[in-house]
Length: 180
Image 1 (tube, rainbow, N blue to C red):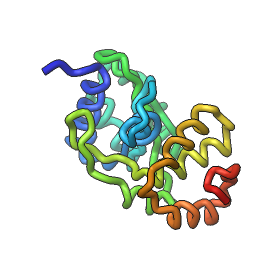
Image 2: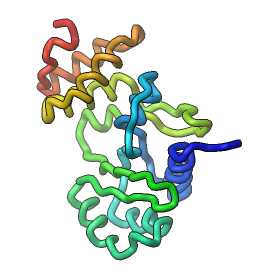
Image 3: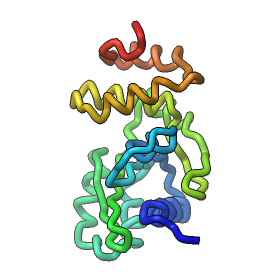
Image 4: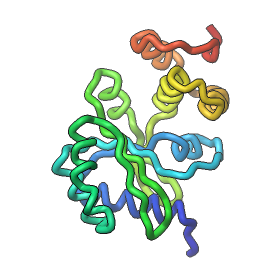
Protein backbone atom coordinates (compact mmCIF):
# COMPACT_ATOMS: atom_id res chain seq x y z
CA UNK A 1 0.00 0.00 0.00
CA UNK A 2 1.35 3.43 -0.96
CA UNK A 3 1.17 6.09 1.73
CA UNK A 4 1.29 9.82 1.16
CA UNK A 5 3.91 11.93 2.87
CA UNK A 6 1.28 13.25 5.29
CA UNK A 7 0.09 9.74 6.12
CA UNK A 8 3.67 8.64 6.86
CA UNK A 9 4.33 11.75 8.94
CA UNK A 10 1.08 11.38 10.88
CA UNK A 11 1.74 7.72 11.55
CA UNK A 12 5.27 8.52 12.69
CA UNK A 13 4.30 11.19 15.22
CA UNK A 14 1.31 9.25 16.56
CA UNK A 15 3.52 6.22 17.08
CA UNK A 16 6.15 8.33 18.88
CA UNK A 17 3.65 10.06 21.17
CA UNK A 18 1.88 6.83 22.04
CA UNK A 19 5.14 4.92 22.61
CA UNK A 20 6.32 7.71 24.92
CA UNK A 21 2.93 7.88 26.69
CA UNK A 22 2.38 11.56 25.83
CA UNK A 23 -1.27 12.61 25.57
CA UNK A 24 -2.13 14.64 22.47
CA UNK A 25 -4.85 15.74 20.12
CA UNK A 26 -4.64 16.80 16.50
CA UNK A 27 -5.80 20.38 15.87
CA UNK A 28 -5.42 22.98 13.11
CA UNK A 29 -5.63 22.39 9.38
CA UNK A 30 -5.37 18.62 9.59
CA UNK A 31 -8.31 18.57 12.03
CA UNK A 32 -10.29 20.74 9.60
CA UNK A 33 -9.53 18.16 6.89
CA UNK A 34 -10.75 15.37 9.15
CA UNK A 35 -13.98 17.25 9.81
CA UNK A 36 -14.72 17.11 6.05
CA UNK A 37 -13.13 20.23 4.61
CA UNK A 38 -10.18 19.16 2.58
CA UNK A 39 -7.68 21.98 2.51
CA UNK A 40 -3.97 22.31 2.15
CA UNK A 41 -1.76 22.51 5.18
CA UNK A 42 1.99 22.39 5.54
CA UNK A 43 2.22 20.99 9.03
CA UNK A 44 0.69 18.79 11.68
CA UNK A 45 -0.52 20.78 14.69
CA UNK A 46 -0.76 18.89 17.96
CA UNK A 47 -1.76 19.98 21.45
CA UNK A 48 0.40 17.89 23.77
CA UNK A 49 0.23 17.37 27.50
CA UNK A 50 3.93 17.60 27.93
CA UNK A 51 6.41 18.26 30.65
CA UNK A 52 9.95 19.47 30.02
CA UNK A 53 11.27 15.95 30.71
CA UNK A 54 9.06 14.62 27.90
CA UNK A 55 10.70 16.85 25.29
CA UNK A 56 13.82 14.69 25.34
CA UNK A 57 11.66 11.62 24.68
CA UNK A 58 10.41 13.26 21.49
CA UNK A 59 13.83 14.56 20.46
CA UNK A 60 15.29 11.06 20.79
CA UNK A 61 13.25 10.18 17.68
CA UNK A 62 14.65 13.18 15.77
CA UNK A 63 18.40 13.08 16.50
CA UNK A 64 19.11 15.91 14.04
CA UNK A 65 17.35 18.26 16.51
CA UNK A 66 19.35 17.28 19.64
CA UNK A 67 21.33 20.54 19.53
CA UNK A 68 18.04 22.45 20.00
CA UNK A 69 16.78 20.39 22.92
CA UNK A 70 17.39 23.12 25.51
CA UNK A 71 15.30 25.68 23.61
CA UNK A 72 12.48 23.12 23.16
CA UNK A 73 12.58 22.32 26.89
CA UNK A 74 12.41 26.04 27.67
CA UNK A 75 9.40 26.40 25.36
CA UNK A 76 7.68 23.54 27.18
CA UNK A 77 8.43 25.20 30.55
CA UNK A 78 6.90 28.45 29.29
CA UNK A 79 3.89 26.65 27.84
CA UNK A 80 4.60 27.86 24.33
CA UNK A 81 4.82 26.26 20.92
CA UNK A 82 7.87 24.52 19.54
CA UNK A 83 8.24 22.84 16.19
CA UNK A 84 10.32 20.14 14.60
CA UNK A 85 10.66 19.44 10.90
CA UNK A 86 10.91 15.73 10.16
CA UNK A 87 13.63 15.61 7.53
CA UNK A 88 12.53 12.11 6.51
CA UNK A 89 9.09 13.35 5.36
CA UNK A 90 9.65 17.13 5.11
CA UNK A 91 6.61 17.73 7.35
CA UNK A 92 6.75 20.17 10.26
CA UNK A 93 5.21 19.17 13.58
CA UNK A 94 3.94 22.09 15.67
CA UNK A 95 3.79 21.04 19.32
CA UNK A 96 1.40 23.32 21.20
CA UNK A 97 1.88 22.76 24.90
CA UNK A 98 -1.29 22.17 26.88
CA UNK A 99 -2.11 25.13 29.11
CA UNK A 100 -4.16 24.36 32.20
CA UNK A 101 -7.53 26.11 32.21
CA UNK A 102 -11.15 25.07 32.63
CA UNK A 103 -11.75 25.33 28.90
CA UNK A 104 -8.57 23.51 27.84
CA UNK A 105 -9.31 20.72 30.31
CA UNK A 106 -12.82 20.38 28.90
CA UNK A 107 -11.60 20.43 25.28
CA UNK A 108 -8.96 17.80 26.00
CA UNK A 109 -11.50 15.58 27.75
CA UNK A 110 -13.82 15.88 24.70
CA UNK A 111 -11.19 14.84 22.15
CA UNK A 112 -12.23 11.83 20.10
CA UNK A 113 -10.38 8.64 19.15
CA UNK A 114 -10.87 8.45 15.38
CA UNK A 115 -9.58 6.66 12.31
CA UNK A 116 -7.77 9.11 10.06
CA UNK A 117 -5.53 8.26 7.12
CA UNK A 118 -5.86 4.64 8.25
CA UNK A 119 -4.52 5.39 11.73
CA UNK A 120 -6.22 5.52 15.11
CA UNK A 121 -5.50 8.91 16.68
CA UNK A 122 -6.86 11.55 19.05
CA UNK A 123 -8.69 14.40 17.28
CA UNK A 124 -10.10 17.64 18.63
CA UNK A 125 -13.92 17.64 18.63
CA UNK A 126 -15.57 19.73 15.93
CA UNK A 127 -17.07 22.11 18.53
CA UNK A 128 -13.68 22.71 20.12
CA UNK A 129 -12.10 23.13 16.71
CA UNK A 130 -14.70 25.82 15.99
CA UNK A 131 -13.90 27.52 19.30
CA UNK A 132 -10.20 27.34 18.50
CA UNK A 133 -10.79 28.87 15.08
CA UNK A 134 -12.89 31.66 16.66
CA UNK A 135 -10.04 32.35 19.11
CA UNK A 136 -7.52 32.50 16.25
CA UNK A 137 -9.84 34.68 14.18
CA UNK A 138 -10.15 37.09 17.12
CA UNK A 139 -6.34 37.39 17.11
CA UNK A 140 -5.54 37.36 13.40
CA UNK A 141 -8.65 38.22 11.35
CA UNK A 142 -7.24 35.60 8.96
CA UNK A 143 -9.31 34.78 5.88
CA UNK A 144 -8.22 31.13 6.22
CA UNK A 145 -9.67 30.96 9.76
CA UNK A 146 -12.88 32.61 8.58
CA UNK A 147 -13.32 30.18 5.66
CA UNK A 148 -12.65 27.21 7.95
CA UNK A 149 -15.24 28.54 10.41
CA UNK A 150 -17.91 29.07 7.77
CA UNK A 151 -17.48 25.52 6.57
CA UNK A 152 -17.32 23.89 10.02
CA UNK A 153 -20.45 25.71 11.14
CA UNK A 154 -22.43 24.01 8.34
CA UNK A 155 -22.35 20.71 10.27
CA UNK A 156 -25.93 19.94 11.29
CA UNK A 157 -24.97 17.98 14.41
CA UNK A 158 -23.08 20.71 16.28
CA UNK A 159 -23.68 21.20 19.98
CA UNK A 160 -24.38 24.92 19.66
CA UNK A 161 -25.22 25.24 23.37
CA UNK A 162 -21.68 24.08 24.20
CA UNK A 163 -20.14 26.46 21.64
CA UNK A 164 -22.20 29.48 22.80
CA UNK A 165 -21.47 28.72 26.46
CA UNK A 166 -17.71 28.76 25.89
CA UNK A 167 -17.91 31.80 23.58
CA UNK A 168 -19.57 33.61 26.49
CA UNK A 169 -17.16 32.26 29.15
CA UNK A 170 -14.09 33.01 27.03
CA UNK A 171 -15.53 36.41 26.02
CA UNK A 172 -14.97 35.81 22.32
CA UNK A 173 -16.27 37.99 19.52
CA UNK A 174 -18.11 35.88 16.95
CA UNK A 175 -18.62 38.48 14.19
CA UNK A 176 -22.16 37.17 13.60
CA UNK A 177 -20.89 33.71 12.63
CA UNK A 178 -23.14 31.95 15.14
CA UNK A 179 -26.27 33.63 13.86
CA UNK A 180 -26.74 35.89 16.85
